[in-house]
Length: 205
Image 1 (cartoon, one colour):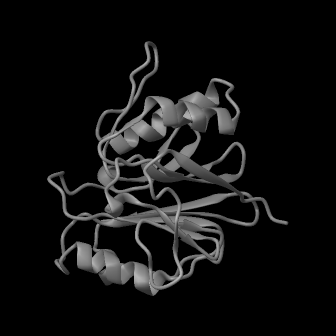
Image 2: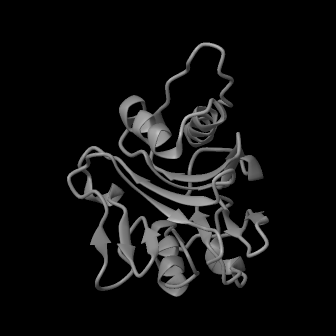
């Protein structure tokens, strides 16, 4: 979930609890918020989000709650990942290219995706060019959905690329983007699976 201002949080937590079967697992949750002075607040917790959610700043944000997986109970596996100036949370699994000379952390495909996207930007590519490259080179297995804060550009990026499973459609409503519709009136970002992205300015108006 990401947006210009936290809202729909209650419905988001209900979905997370349903996906986690209500069990107090150690997957945890994390968020990043872009504050008015240009700084970024990042927090990660190992408790289920429905047990330990705290108020989010009224600021542009991204939020990720993990479902139970066969990974160690560790903050390393809690999103968002921070790499090469990109703060990224990802849903699904991906195959990320490994260009020669580019160091990508290999703990999870999500972290590799954050490092790869950040490395493209660090190499001098413009944001839209980097997103175009991601859409051509990253293979969704089954989903390359991600939300990211690009610190150098003060932008929020929402990316949706999947293989047709409706579970991996990203949805949007009133300046908020989520991995599931959180009620009525949500519109799909990429219903047919083709790579689609949107970029939101995070600088104060």
